[in-house]
Image 1 (cartoon, rainbow, N blue to C red):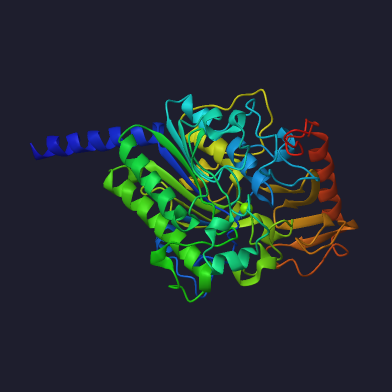
Image 2: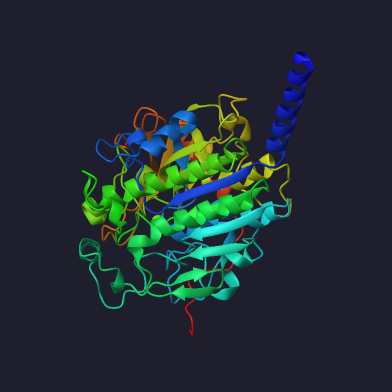
Length: 461
Ligand code: MG
């Protein structure tokens, strides 16, 4: 009797696991301008992030995880499509991101994570910053999301008059920005009180998790913060020793805790992959309001490591092998990974720049299938990484007033294993590696076909 009860339990466990293998849920928590060094699990000495630290212990902490671009719009286009922004016209040397007067957006010919998962029967929700086109034809609801709740672009846009974002943050002057809050395709509030926004996005995510129940779902939660101007809720005001920036990151950490608690409460925690990362590095000119890339060089807007390597944690209790992954991964890999985990296949009518990380996540292999990374600044390839070596063909310090990129011929070469801060150029000692990376860059560039630009258009022009 006991044996048959145990076999029944085993059968149930097996059925549950096979269900988990077939249709896991996915939650992406995507911050805005969070630096590599801004979490305590990534070495910040004063900002407290206990929920993320727990998630890092229970899941995988990725120390070489990249974004598709060093600024908001192209980074998001890369994450959602699994393709470098240069392939879908979502990057530009003229206008680096979309603005409230932009007429363009992510073309609906692109397949997003959401539209791909919808085909496999998923419920989908976008919450937070979109920044892939605020006009009706480009909204999340046109890209495979069942619902949308959020601010369609950056939280420093639509200023009512010229405002100093540091002063606005210190004075909690959220009314200085005429930002819209949208529900699906309608503006429901304007200006939105940004001191409530992290909490409201969190509550929306929790409500969605509760509502989806046992049905498979994908939630894309893209926080507007810690992008400047910094706003935090009343419960987090002046609570961090790291100042306003610390308050904001600690509220984001609270949000992660609430979402993981909701997954537990709904009984879907063991069937849900949660990834936490950010769209680009810290906005350094804003000093204490701008976060830190830790020991990595430079920040947002640059193709040095600090601009494109992000603190990344992935958890899926019972499935993901806990540990630290030092190999490379990228937000570009999420679409192929999720599609594979959901039991789907990628269409073969387009080029993907992402790879399937599922074997690394499950601990079936010690290595990641990603061995290369291409660093774009607008439409131009500035740098290439293969293994531990990175060559810079061009560099431009972010937001420094440096007008033109500096061209390096021969390129600068760094060994990111022994020199993660990119301090010591070793090109002269390794001409063979320089040549290999030059060839890699040339063959990559040859494979990128020119497409219409979707960032430069302005409404009415
Ligand atoms: Mg950003």
